[in-house]
Amino acid sequence: MTDLALDPTETAFFFDFDGTLAPIVDEPSHVRIDADVVALVRRLQEVSGAVAVISGRSIAQLDAFLSPLVLPASGVHGLERRDARGTLSSASFDPEHLTELAGAVAAFARDRPGLIAEVKPGSVALHYRKAPEKAAECIAFAGLQAKRFPGAALAHGKQVVEIKLGGRDKGDAVLAFMGESPFQGRTPIFIGDDVTDEDAFRRVVELGGVAIKIGDGATLATHRTADITSFHRWLARLEETDGPFPVVQPGLVERCEDATPARMASAAEG
Image 1: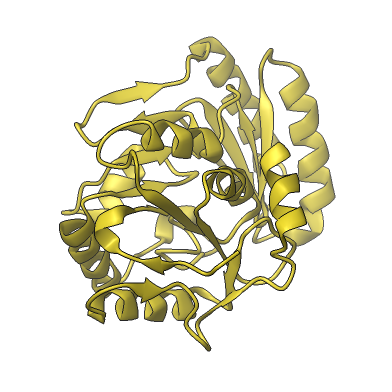
Image 2 (image 1 turned 180 degrees about the horizontal axis):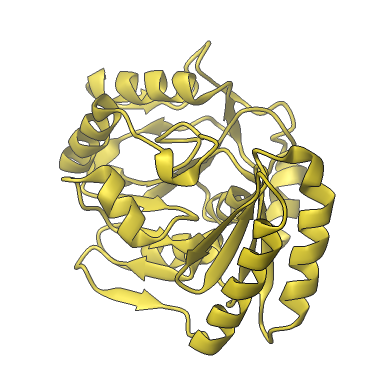
């Protein structure tokens, strides 16, 4: 597979939020995105016209963190989406189920210091970053909760497990965006750091695009960067470059060692 050189006007850019645009913090509500990074994304949007954020956070949270920038976005791992025209759509779920689930997770977290329950539109996340020794207990509890509600699914992240009352994922959000203007017909690129981003990596690979994994760990991504700082430096270099921009930038972004045609085919088959 010949490595791509990106032309921003022919590329559809998709970014995860936590661990990609903003650093991961112990308290989800305490996250802050650097103003310089917001400016980089804003300038890329002005040049490309096809930039979206696809995150586990809600769209309302993304708007608050990225303000005054407002982008096409997908929240809650694909359960809600806002297209480039500003039209909102979301997966259907039973509000009573969400209330019941939120109560159960809150009670579980309340009895175990260090755990944080986070209610989102259509899902509830259980964070154990401040109590990593409780990981197995949290995952087991979440699995039992998911079985209580028809159509519920688990999403595993970095020291968090989420019970979603719907089957959509980040890959579904990529496909939806790529089927409409201004993303349609472009080469997609998705950058993310977590397990939940693998669904998006898979779809981008299917579409012949570029997937960049931030950090270590097994991945379907075609490329890798060491950490969030390296990614931000890569993004700044992209915006400083006139003309085609090679995805591979030595010391910042490299091809994944296992990014072979066979692995790509396996990823595309699902």
